[in-house]
Image 1: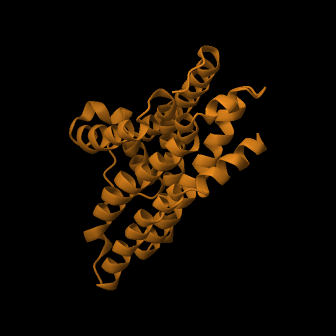
Image 2: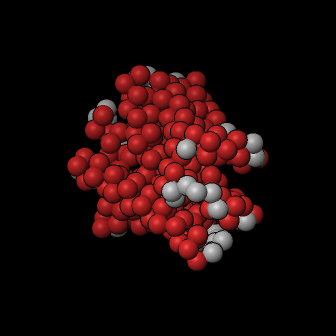
Image 3: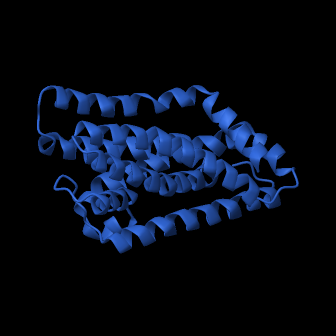
Length: 236
């Protein structure tokens, strides 16, 4: 499993794809720094920067880039067939790749959100935002890893989920929020550090349980899907 993880990390960070992880976190920190430099109270900019950019854009988009990248490239170039010839249980392929993806996503999103919390004047807020980002990284990455095995266009499907389901329906149609990872992250962050700038719309129990459901079902689905590749000789 460690070998699969090392190969995955080398492939992920050795590609230009890794450079795509930098602009959004830097933009997030930059906007918060500008607001702080102009002496604006964080109650005036916190919701837009933290919730509107950090949780709605930076976290899911980075998870999408990483989650679809750790296995999607191998599906596209055909090397997945070579991997499947190895005598490894499918979970020993999926789980290391998932671990690498979660680590990369969590570090890339939690650190800038912590800095934003500090710029807002609260280390405890920064810690809450970072912790929520780490939890959200598990759910988003598991989902997007599964999408990379279900479709030739996982990025497109991921963007539909982020922009349409979470960005549009999740904000205005209450029934869809229970399937919105963004809402879980906001709820958990607000629970860890209650604040008026985060608009939690779910109960903490719902957010915690549904996060676990997303992770478990997505990973089980990915393992089963990878198994079907070897059985049917599929490459997509």
